[in-house]
Image (cartoon, rainbow, N blue to C red; front, side):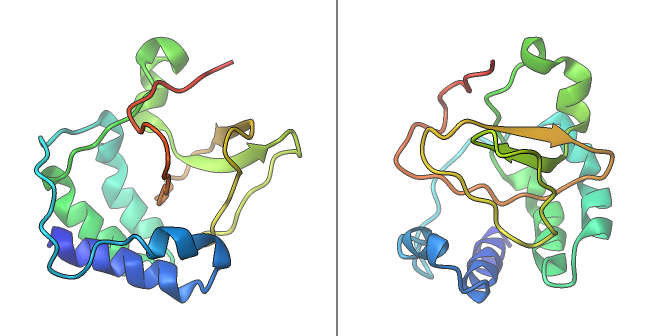
Length: 149
């Protein structure tokens, strides 16, 4: 089922027909590729997965349902610590407003991508509704601690 999730995400991203996604999609694992061996982990915020499925758009419902189904088979991670924002934030965060390069807060419609260039200052403000975000990154250390001002 994890493989099904990977390819539902690939198909969804391809359907967006967005030039910014080309570099990610060109490196997408080929069908039948062996998955990495990872240690399964969890996060407190995953208790919101059922609400996230209910809030999904029609185009993202299959991804949301698969993610909720396989969530206990994945290696979840975050670079934020309780001392950065408080433990309540880490149990309840959903990213719904985006600030990049001091352009002002925007609320992006569900299902649409948000971009920022490498090293561009950016921030996220939370709201009450859970949000499923597909976070794509390449060319850096995913385990690096976030710089928080």
